[in-house]
Amino acid sequence: MARINIPLDVITSRLNFGERFSGLRSQSVATRWSNLKPISEFLDVKRISKPANFAEVQTRVNYNLSYFSSNYVAVFLMLSIYSLLNNLTLLFVLILGIGGTWGIGKLDGQDLVIGSIRATTSQLYTTLLVICVPLGLYASPIGTAMWLIGATGVTVLGHATFFDRPIENAFSEEAV
Image (spheres, rainbow, N blue to C red):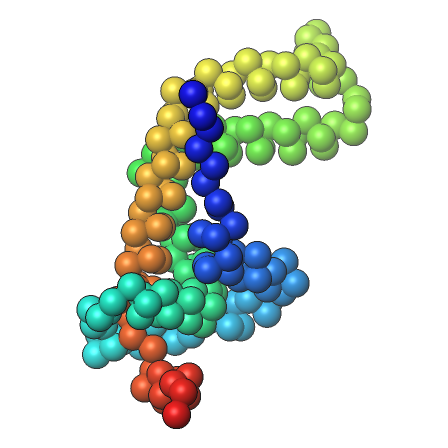
């Protein structure tokens, strides 16, 4: 049976994934948050329209993903908080794991002594692992992550697809 070679470069080169995410690595968090566009501009219902063809979809998505990138990160963070508040078991496991690791780290390698019980840091980390892994599997983090990916994808790509570019920008790119 012959292998089917899919030219992924053809697909990804049109979407400029490499160049699109290079700005995320080079910007600081303060710079990223200072680029947030106002909510009145981000949710301007007068600029929502159906694209005429796939070429227009591509230009809208390319423009909106770069122009509203900070807003889309904020949407992702809000959906992340929403998903954790709806999955309290996962939130508890995350707090327990992070808090337990931080607490064991505060011991600075010393043994924990409570009354006549002495526990080494290795025993504490093992106990934390034995508690957090089964609880983490019970909390269904994969389902939550898949929901988060789907909800973010639909929200961000839906906004980027149906949100028209500003009029002055649309005319500046046309060849005369």
